[in-house]
Image (tube, rainbow, N blue to C red; front, side, top):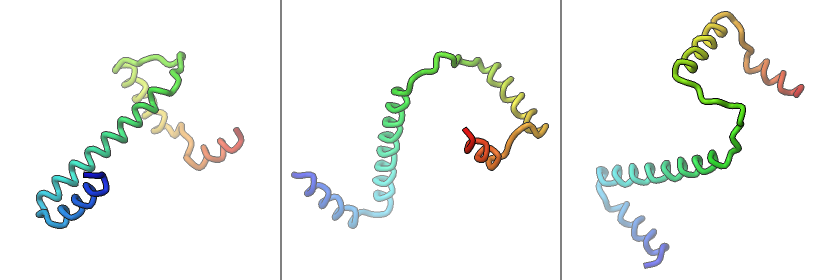
Length: 91
């Protein structure tokens, strides 16, 4: 059976199945597509060069940075998206 014949047969069967089975098929297809997209994204990420200046942070270090960022935000130490866009035009 060719791919075209398989597709045609599946289209015909989809019109015949009940709602419950149709939902199962839909979930399977969506899961498969998401896994393919995730796999492709992971492959692209593997190809990115690693910045040797970056270092892994411990959970404690990450929490400290988060607390510091929250405090800066609460103190108004941030720029808006519009300000960032204007600033980036000058780069």
